Image 1 (tube, rainbow, N blue to C red):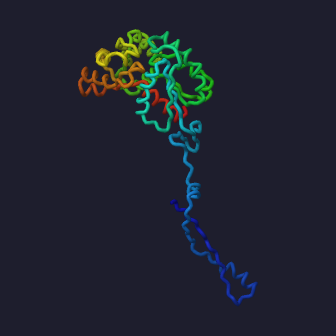
Image 2 (image 1 turned 90 degrees about the horizontal axis):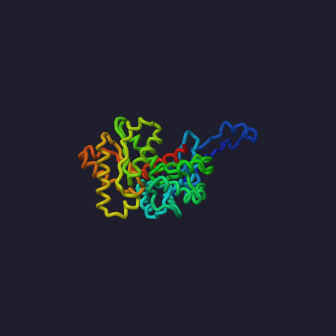
Image 3 (image 1 turned 30 degrees about the vertical axis):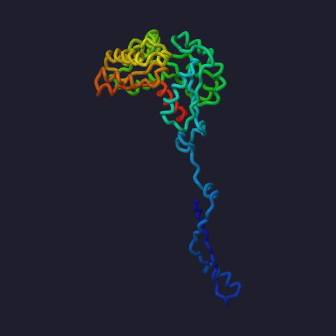
Length: 316
């Protein structure tokens, strides 16, 4: 049981018994004595709790005496799967849980209708009309938003324009943007990053999207090695025979590594969640144990959740 120590100071007045009242009054100041403080242990849970110093919420960003009060309670990040395949959403959960952000709640949204798999830009645009009306009801409840589709998905800029997000400076990103940004920070200045994705259509789409995101035009090749694809769509990654998926993934990785100086590989589809091991195998087979083990494998879901965690904590 907590112990609260109460202090008691006793002051006594000493005067001669034979003195007159006037003499006693005059002598009181002279003979006043303050005795040693007494410490008395007092057991009381409620009082002990009340006397504890106030602590700021765990994980809060503090600058001097100023605390970012926007996240005074548990943060909440909404992870958005803009296709309507619930199993694909479920595949993201182990990756997020692995990060161990216990002070943050992670909620998942799956498109209520629309494309089962986003296989091109038309599917991405169509998914917006199925997602955005339902998402608008969720914007006030969460502190950050991740669009889990590996493309320059139109939901990312559209969500940023929503008053509930823009007015409160809530962070929004997509797994494409998060993986590219993370790769650039991870690799050596003389290295490049590349993307392994699904259907061949994504080679041109993601190349254009990366050049636009980097804003470098023709100079993008200095940091960007390009895109290689498996020929499978997002649902095939889980429905096709496992050995066929493994072979196609590893072949795509090896083609990308042959372009030289590749320091990071982005998993270019949310459906590739958890496939980093086969990518590592391909790196080792192509480059050897040492160099193959040094290549960074960047999952956009992990990169996106980690970035949102930092942005929400800091209140950027």
